[in-house]
Image (cartoon, rainbow, N blue to C red; front, side, top):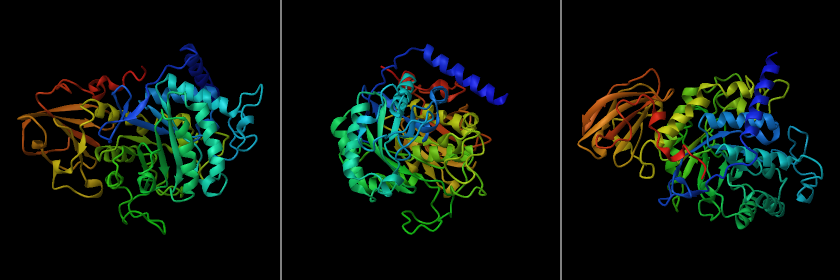
Length: 482
């Protein structure tokens, strides 16, 4: 009965999607902002990257399931889904169709009279566009390149095929790599990237590295790399786990904010974001199912830490969703797979709380925001660290432990400032009144983590009567289509 209920819901969702129209809406093209730190639409509106890792979407979901998943993404505020275009050579999808029936000769990619692997990916891309969602295409997972399953010549053939097929799709972001170091088979990544870029200059491109690395380490000087991505990974403090080439100091495993700092040391300056932090409901350290699992409060902390450090957006992930676990289908990763099916995980709190961060960022002037730890007096370390960011006339401090906050209101304009507390789990706002400049100590105002917001009283970005950050959001991303 339960399975029948789920199938019925997915069928209804698919019917609703079809009823919305057969042609996808045009999605505005993305570009890098003039200051080199953010992403924007080509018409100048800010684009705050809020992605879900739907890694196995092309392989594991059928049309109805894919439409339902994308509906839920859009409703939860996501504007990007990161997918593995192929997770094997060849890859197979839910219809039993293979990605490469004749290897890297793509003339046979679309057999006559067959709904091919690539037809299904086309459908997913078009359905995403209709909902204002970009598809971050990890062209090939890094493990296959590391294993020698695609060389530079084959990468060029693959790149020509991909660019030809998707260069006119409006909602594509190209992602090289896939959980791999860039100094492993570098010539393959350069061949794939330059081939795609030579045929498609309209879409942005980045590189998804291995955990605890940033793409800037290898590719920041490449013309094909438009913005950087790092993977802060899934380890808790102290989980070194025997890496020989550990690129960060011991005991900093959860401090994803430091990757933003280290990336911006590379020139030229390019936008950066955490493309894979700890996933909700995944074992800490990733591989041992007996370990505690990361919770919604953890994924919120990673998001606010990274963005307040200067990231141009953030990527969320969930153990069950990224591998689309469901009854009767073996887990793609880890011995114990996932604790619940993917469609149940869509109701988990972390998945539905990321939108409050996006609304917060878009509620105030976007492009002048900078990280500024000088806002906080007497800061702490690890989870007691308060993360601070500001524009010319507003500031924000993220607090995940409930400690008192000594905040210098003089870092922004205005003789007086209006102050709010935003609950990170609900987006609810509590107005704390007006305060003059200088250092002021604020008590914690919530039952969980949240953000202290101070705005020049002469500005009207948020109203004192406003009760939710959702209502305060600027119109920049409310209409994602041109």
